[in-house]
Image (tube, rainbow, N blue to C red; front, top):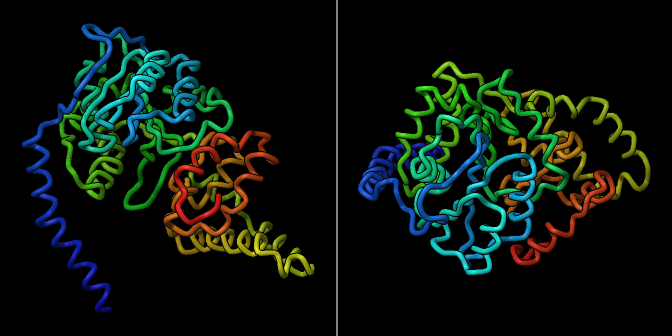
Amino acid sequence: MIKRQLLLLRSYLKWQFLVPAARMVAIARGPRQIALAWPQGEIKLGPKIALFMHFDGRGLIREQVLHYIAELKAGGRDVVFITNSGKLKPTALQAAQALCAAVIVRKNIGYDFGAWRDALDYLGLPRTETQEVILANDSVFGPIIPLGDALRRLNYEKADVWGLTESWQLRYHLQSYFLAFGPTALRSEAFKTFWASVVPVPMKTYIVREYEVGVTQAMLRGGLRCAAVWKYEDLMRMVSRADVEKLIEEEETELGKQDPMHITRKLQILRIRDGVARRMALNPTSDLWRQLLLSGFPFLKRELLRDNPTRVEDVGDWVEVVRDTLGADPEPILIDLRQMLKGGAP
């Protein structure tokens, strides 16, 4: 009880004092944090644009990021590469220039939403001819499978704003590692007002609550239709009572009683079923990673494999799912993990 009261007090003090101070710092800085832009002068862009946000303290670009950008380009999008790294090494800049319509290098201020707002403002988006703006970032591994199918499912006759996945944590929102705005959304007052309100606040919890969750809520309040390609309810339904019964049946075998992989699968399925029973919001890109991959989702979240912050039980066989079930190559992810992981195994 005392611990809960202390947590509530800390949260209250944070939002009463620290957040206003952080906002004042952000307003004083201003949204424009661009250090370098290529090409100089007018930047020509087609009707479909992807603003891709990147960060690497070394000034490098991972091969997987370049692959992701190439997939967006193959899907008919002009990609604008925005890095919060403050710099790019010459080889990285050349690689980005070879694939992208524009490159923007900015200071590491304001996280993803600060970068996207800066780019929207600098490029004068949306323009008269703009029909779609995708916001994407490098917080995922992949695409593990071709991205084209996911891009083709962005139907702006059915919804004005699309995410790949949706979450009910904090409040309902489309998860911000991939957001797509169609023509109705781009010309709405809600879109204009939201992005005008974004300032580079140096506080991640504020960014999550006010911008990641806030952008979907702002679009909904503006009367826009928001939808996810992979719906939360569909993913939850993939974990049925039959799955539990099958695991219990397998548990009767000698291998089922002793195999740790079997035990972790069972624990994760029970965790998901518990979420359904208690109406507890789970994070699809973590808790439902397996269901996502099996239904054609092209990504794995980097933090899931690097940190596993929510202690997902069954992620230990992700290599087998990618290689044996999907027929895809896990090696590009393993290459990155060899540099990222500290004290753990893939």
